[in-house]
Image (tube, rainbow, N blue to C red; front, side):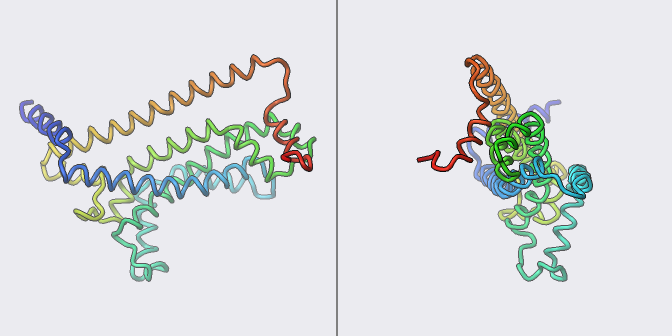
Length: 260
């Protein structure tokens, strides 16, 4: 017990003193996850919004595959990216293996199905509620997906924050493709795993505290967004029998010269 308490005290000292090694690892970890999350969200939000509205042959198969990708272990994703980026792989000429770019790619591939699936569900629920009204105004699937995604922007912002939390807490894929190289590809999760195996508990505990703090902060932001959204919906519900916002935007978008 004394060893654990001493390690925790030393970990707090490292955090308060802004230890150079600790801050470097934290900064790299946040940079990798933020970049990967941005890449995945740009594609995932667009694709998910379109899937929520589009109806085509084989859609059920596509959704089944998408939901399957949600359960793929991160080490499998890391293995696939490793094979792609290895010297004998199709992308070996890029020389990205064991680099910052490789970790970003692995996390982006891991987060993309999550963003796409959650966006698709949110937009499809909105489509079931507003779809007929928008179709009666002449809105095509692409326009409907854009309008509905904007109408669900608070829910989608929660998806973005949750995807970043998933990325920053990932360990398996970045361990495989990054190599956990000190000073280059070591991030919080891989450093915790390594330092724990070495018995360096203070650094592992310090990184763990920061990682828990980041996750706690993200959950707090999500809770605030949820409360903000509920308050906005309640305020909108008190307005006297005005057209639904999404329908009004569709009418404006479909009326020539409406933006003039």
